[in-house]
Length: 493
Ligand code: HEM
Image 1 (cartoon, rainbow, N blue to C red):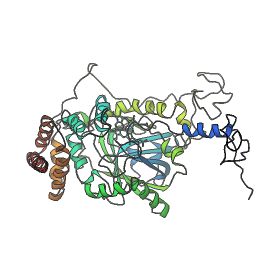
Image 2 (image 1 turned 135 degrees about the vertical axis):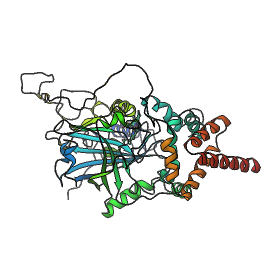
Image 3 (image 1 turned 180 degrees about the horizontal axis):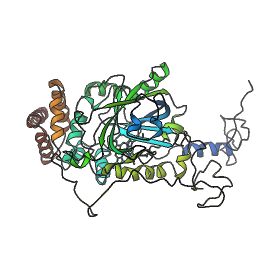
Image 4 (image 1 turned 60 degrees about the horizontal axis):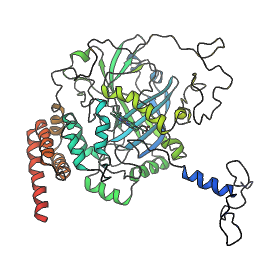
């Protein structure tokens, strides 16, 4: 094998990678040492901004395989056209609140961001391991995240801030119960489900529309960690989940998920008992049963973490024909937020990076976007950069826009449309009541452990009040547990 010689960025052969150029053996370093300066300067520029949320993550490639011949009844999306059809995917798991280096085993939702490289372009389902979310309007998202991330003065996550925001946000009660229950800390990334969370629109080849929810049910079975187990593991190994995923795929134990959907005929939405576009709520299975449609398998690790996982960019706005957005206000805000975040985090040409490019589309992306920082491909070569043109350039299909929805009413900031069960607590209470007694007890302890750290009485009172509205017993037990913990703390002082 020929020996590979080290070069500078410009390709010049490097003669020494251990000694700088100096003025004599005992003298100072010389400015003319171009290799040294280049090496240091390059190192200084290694970091890019981390994701403003979901900064800690692990990614893997795999495929999706269709198992149900019925899917074309609901969507014309080509990836579902026949049983056995496979589409390549990239999936990134993440935690939400911590910055890079934070332990994997925290109590936090897990991101479940999936990119299908379809022949009609990338379809990104940027979901979580929870079927619901804390908020129902994207305008609250920056405040919510500020309350979860580091405090401007203490530079720590502060229970005071998280609970203060919660105590003004009753719609988060359902998700708070979910998160402080047993599923709040998955044992591994393989042993948890993924959800699209929002309601999406599907349209079939006849133009019929359906509202749809996406569920990825783990084939490994659900396994979780208790708070104590998670603290012990996280104290020893920050990258516990990341390592587990890498080890499993390296062993050839490819994790898989069964892709299931809930389908609601378009017209049902207006008469359903709650707003089906409210992401703080689930659709009960008895109303809309789960239908298995395929299998997702992760079978390959990225060769380079930074190039592929860190630079991966998922955007809920990336949809393919047959898929559209619903009027969910959280989803609507996200349709803007991701591409914008990525243009800042990675730059305008991030869509051209191999992990983000539409690998399933023959010939790749075709449009008249040009130039910009770090345009590293041929930039369209000699092709015209305007449309329409008389040079056989790419043109739109001209097909009818078929994922539009009928609307009425006035513009302006307004509360959600009223449905009978639009309240914040019905499903939160139901979730508490389906838990087994021992899980309920752990939930109370976990919530109380966090609430007991809150210094303002009104904040904890308001918060406990929400849990009591969800379930009277939960509220009472929580009140007692918080009082006991506070009493024990005072006794110890
Ligand atoms: C990441 C915004 C709600 C799941 C992000 C990022 C932003 C963001 C700016 C970083 C993107 C990047 O730099 O690549 C928002 C806003 C929301 C919202 C404004 C509400 C309006 C949600 C919800 C879910 C979710 C409801 C799940 C159902 C994720 C995931 C990631 C992420 C999984 C990480 C994607 C990756 O692995 O790269 N979010 N988010 N977000 N968000 Fe959201």
